[in-house]
Each structure stands twice: as structure tokens, then as C-alpha cells.
Amino acid sequence: MTFKKPLTFRRLFNYFLAGLLISLPIWGTGYVIYSAFTFIDGIIDTQYFFGFTIPGLGVVIVLSFITFIGFIGQGLISKQLIDFFDHVLEKTPGIKVIYSMIKDFIEAFVGDKKKFTEGVAVEMTNGIYKLGFVTSKNLKSIQLEGLVAVYFPHSYNFSGNLFLVPKEKIKPLKGNSSELMKFIVSGGVTDVEAISKSVKSESGAE
Image 1 (cartoon, rainbow, N blue to C red):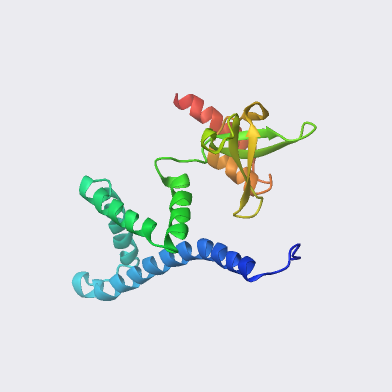
Image 2: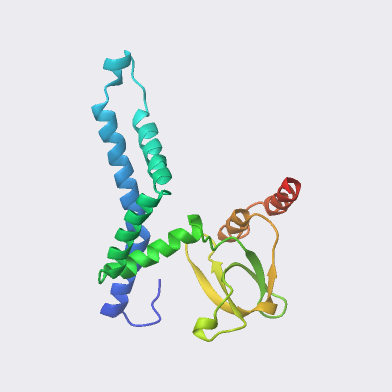
């Protein structure tokens, strides 16, 4: 790797934050779930209660508990509690930037306001197209009316670029967005027919 710009403390700190954003949610989630698995398997002696061991019982219990928490989280009381902690974290200096970025990124995939659902082909130059996903169609608030935000994932990497392009330059693509994402991230080596098959299956479902 070569650096086009000299390394400074600010750049190193930005690299640290980027690494933290990528690794912390993954490590934290994995550690909590693994700890819960081992704790439950340690306190529940299935050999004593049933006369035989039940491998993976901790996994089943933890996954069921997480699902139950998600179900409860849809309720009004839990929503108020979540909103309270959300407000506290977003008002905490230093933490609010990281928390907001992680929250927005997760909600873009699994939240009610999913972003990566509309795949498009954007004409760049001389009939060359780039595949991406529209993440925002209204940019009036930043004085960029007439442009849309299109995210271009990198192949073989969990990163990408965001471009603001004229609406007439984009071409909506039919098909399952997850299949399109796999096609882009894999550098185009995955089965492109899977995208067309998803179009047919969606048409048949209608």
C-alpha cells in the first residue's frame, strides 16, 4: 500500500476510527453471543435433567431470546426505552458520531428505511456503466436538486464510493437487490443468471 498524502496524526486517527467502526460491532456482537452460549451451556446440565446431553442448547436458547427481545422491541414501552437510550447516546460527545454512523449503516440494511433496495446502472463515459444502489433521491437540503445519491460497492471489499449523478444518467435495474449486490462485490464472477431468475420469481409471485 502506498500513501499519496503524508501520514499525520489526524489521518492515523481517522484510520483508527474507520477500523473501530468496522471491527467493534462485529467483535462486540460475537463476544456477547459466544459468552451467552458458554454461560448457558455451563449452568444447564442436560445430562442431569434428561439423562443425555443436548449439544447446542445454549445456541437455541440465545437465538430464541434475541428473537424474543426483537419482538418485545416492537412494543410501545420498549420503543420508549430504546428512544431514551438512543437520545442519550446521540447527545454524548465523542460517542454520538460513532453511534450515529453505526445506527444509520445498520438501518440501511435491516431497518424500516432500507436503502440498498434499488439497483441502478449509471452511465459514466462513452457507454461505460457502473452498477450501484440509489440511497437518496432528494438532495434539495444540500442545494443539489436534480441529483440523486448512488452508492457503488467495491468488488471483493466491504467498502464503496458514493456519487451524486443526474437522474437521467441512471437506469433502474430489475431483479433482487441482494443478487445484484453479490454480483458487484464479487467483481462480476457470480452467476449473473441469478439476477434474471429473481426477476422471473418476483413476476410469478405477483
